[in-house]
Length: 188
View 1: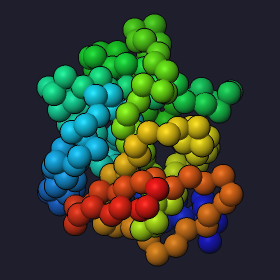
View 2: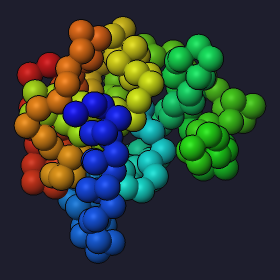
View 3: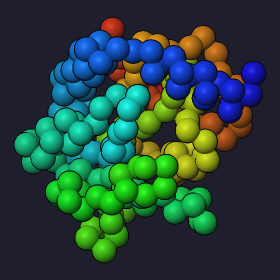
């Protein structure tokens, strides 16, 4: 099965999670993140702005602000095929971009160097227990992670855990995956 077919299959599976179950799963995953040593020792957290059916990150951003952490969110630059992270201090800094994603408006935001990011929450559609992930396509995070030496965590519903994925030489595994059932240390 191709990565494109796997992505479509995974999205359909996630859309079957009812609203109440979705909210409960998100809450449990958030609690695991907030209790984790990685979260507690990180002052700068990188996270995407989620949209359904992804694990909700809006509460994670609010909690980061409450705890005095610096939140940085990515903006995609498709022509260069790169992500640039910007400090987010207020949701009004966001604008809707392609695919209805919320991203920082560079005019209202300050770009940050990836070296200051201590914890990167890496998005994806499917994961193996060894930390390999099926992203949304484009390879933005694999390019970014190849030069990133900080902590990587992915947040996933149990439905996103799979036995195997097609792995290519440029795929970079994440260090930890948190699901509503617990923590998976991937050995990175």
